[in-house]
Image (cartoon, one colour):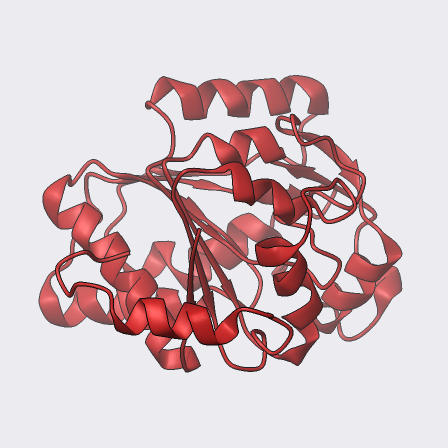
Length: 260
């Protein structure tokens, strides 16, 4: 696990660099897209590179991490609509190239199984963007989630619904109680995981992720078992890390050619 501590704009640039490097080398790259606040600056940077530098997504595919259950198809906070607004419509993804779990399916169990098959059919995700919740969840894998879980329906914790109420006019009653989410094992199947976190509110979750024991109580800690994880955090999110100085030293000494 590589930990990079830097200002927010630098973190977004580094994540975009990793994605651009993949797309330039392999245009048919499969990306994993996250929602929430953490990846927004990355999407802005990718859209800028598409417009100004000709970075193309035309042959790429993308899969979303999760989706609310039951939100109407035209609801602005339906994650498919959020991803469309934040990145898909701003670059040149082909029609149908961005997929998400179907939170409006009549058979949600089959919808989850179909989503797993769709990811497997394209050979898996090359680079997965991730955020982390204040309680250590990744995607919507709440505390107590199986570390071997696959895409499934989950009940959101009160904490997660309160955290997400800011997207629903600060009214937690409007936040759905259920979602479809990639499981922890599904996420772990991606070849490179890039997690972004900013702000002091994420400091304890980041500390547990990087330096704590692997535990279902902090689901993100399963990432410690992945062979290629990059954790991009600002000073505030890194404020609980006991080895923060070491992470800064190792990144400063890193060969320029190596990348993330």
